[in-house]
Image 1 (cartoon, helix red, strand yellow):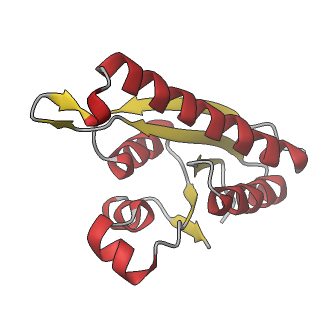
Image 2 (cartoon, rainbow, N blue to C red; image 1 turned 30 degrees about the vertical axis):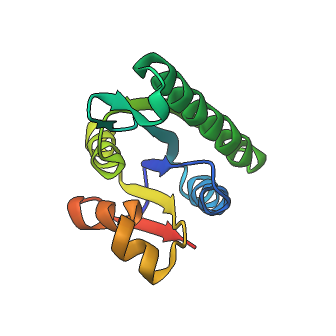
Length: 146
């Protein structure tokens, strides 16, 4: 199936960079556009205070900067394959998986590509896995790169 639009979800991790290489290869072969997405998830409030007693503007700014850095680093990897990506940073409170699925719907992506953080069985049971959540809630095919 030729892809027209690939959504590459990144968190800047090593696994995300491997996913970027795969997405770029697929895009080059199929002529698809690549959109890079990082979701900056704001820290939840506990008893009315942000984690670490830092104000919400600071937490939001830190999350946004981390997402922008992840997108920039991922775009560099994609460009090495001679593919020019479209980059998007989304700031969202709550679930990263839901934001990825929503963006995939919004751009009518044919494929979502993302890395697997490799938390291990125990970490995934306790924390859940964004890639597994995306896989279960989207109707778009998902390529999870280890």
